[in-house]
Image (cartoon, rainbow, N blue to C red; front, side, top):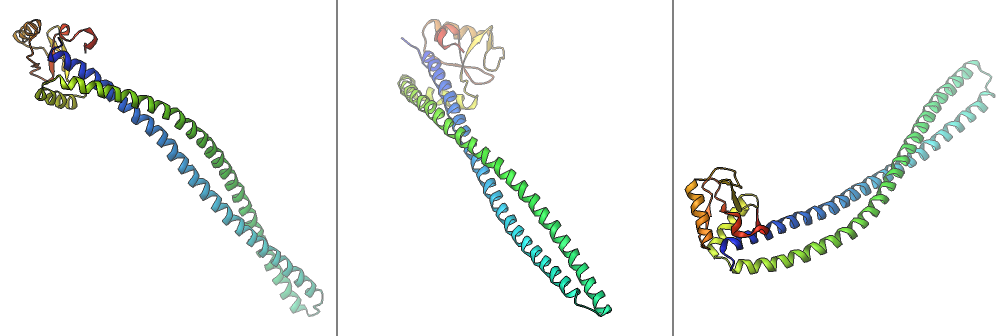
Length: 247
């Protein structure tokens, strides 16, 4: 018949397995969430780049319109210049044409700069869309893969929780409560072996008399539970819980 220490060792093995599964489930969900977050961020970047490109295209059209208007004004001024006979008026018109050419040059530079910016935005938008497509494919694949893993892990966890309920039913309620407190406090290691006279939880030496008491108690199939005086973990001789539950 299983003693309380046997049940505790079996319970700890189940709880450790459940903890690992919970962590794995959390990691899987976070992995998919991270891809989704990157996908949303890339989508926002692509939208911002597209908006910026539209603004640059509008500015470019406006700049080309102003450039065409300036060219027309220069042509018109040249035609008028050919009709001027007064030297003073001619010099004034030539100066005006020169200023128009300077303005046209500035407009041409601005138009070329806008074209360069449009090319850069187009390239960035293309890269963002390519990355977005890659992320969408990756996200779909990861969702399919992780959904299958999550379903399997959740089913196994449910089975183990049912098994855990059975073990809990065989434990003294007070002992169960103390085990769970130690398990939470000591990083998922509440029940440990004694090896070479030391607790395998904190690796501190135990009083020889305590070791003798534990060994004797367990050989007699006693239900008495012993605790490490250093770390408060539940301690036992390996033979007590069987090799399959050794820590």
